[in-house]
Length: 336
Image 1 (cartoon, rainbow, N blue to C red):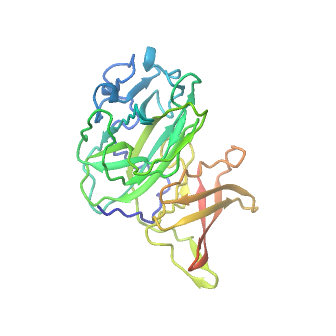
Image 2: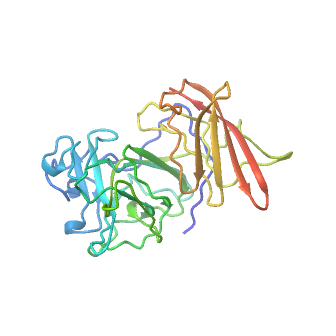
Image 3: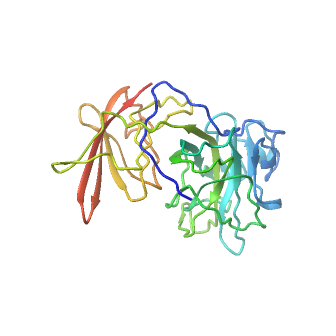
């Protein structure tokens, strides 16, 4: 299966339709009152049965289905009043994997470029539970239905997006990736995909389970246009933006769930050290961006304060033993 990241930009003021049905888990059959009641959520599925069923939480729930105090952690919804929860991994001999499958409003268009994003957190984990570590290798796999899962086995799925660093975050983090559809996919599955597992134990060495909360899945069509104010150079030689890159020239960090973060997407061969500066040259955000890791700039400075609207300069540097250092430069507009 061939997937390609592409260079594009968001059109200012344009809010594309979300193609994920019930991406925020706000539509459901009943309020949850126990663990393992993800089947209450409308238009979503899961591969496992019995104890392999993910969890559904709601502010109107009771018992083990309540927010913000869940059996494993304290967490509030990223957006709305509901979230999903699942076991990505647990240590042997009680190894366990759970998966969630969502569907699209319509089959994806072959050759169309899409941007998908979602929010994930470990929550503020309780001291007395097994949860409290992060794992790598979870991600998204496109398909045509709900995959079948035997007991708690790990599914053999091809990931279109996969995280290679162990993630353990007490606060919500939003991940974004861009791809070109080569089949008319109707569904996507979220869970542990990686072949190599790396564990980061966050609280103490007694934690044996990686549990995550999910919210606000969004899929939008995106444009392949290149922003005209980008430049790139290696020494005195001019270069074009690398094929397979996606670099928006603006975003709107207003917490409406659309274009809230500035997300670069790169092909697998590139790793960029990115610096964003204001008009006076002061650094407001830095990160290392790759094909698999991009948390995105949320429009705040290093102290967590919102940056004023306007243009900001970005500078990206990559290094290669064969080609030396390459520097890309451009502008990104913060719109509020």
